[in-house]
Image (tube, rainbow, N blue to C red; front, side):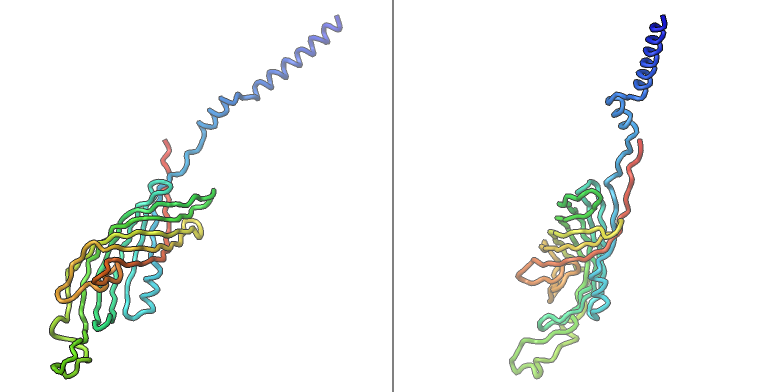
Length: 248
């Protein structure tokens, strides 16, 4: 009889321990469902980034014949795809062979960038390939020119002509071109980026001023009669405004 009580006591202890163990054990399916239901949704990849071209700002301070700025911005709509734009203004006075001229005007560019870089966890850097369609609205002012005629008709053929025929302003000029872009952007600190991009430009069409030419086009750079290609770059500092995904 005493042994029967002992066995009953042992069985009771075993049943109590098994019940507590069952309560503390959750099936993998139930655990995964619980985690999924409590999982925090990831941040949205969308972000707006804007800044300025440092090169043009510095050049404006150190060159008396140049003044300009460029504002840059991009909007990320997927992890590796950005809508991008630039807007700027330039005033440049230059001596080109026998011609001294001033170009003044603004331009804008719109297009996209693709990020080709696979970031490690916690990084947000980009190696970029992109395209832009660009347009300018500008004027050309012929300040002075030197005649190439060496005949005795001109008493002083080396003197610059600063008034009269052909000098003066040519307004309401336009140009259209596209750009192929390669560059990178590096996150220096949280949401602050330093970028460098190289640009190959191809002129599509431009308004040619009377008795002159678009030797320099704002945003496009130098243009020659026999070559519709040019190159440029920008060196930007920008700030990113992130957007968070909305909770359902």
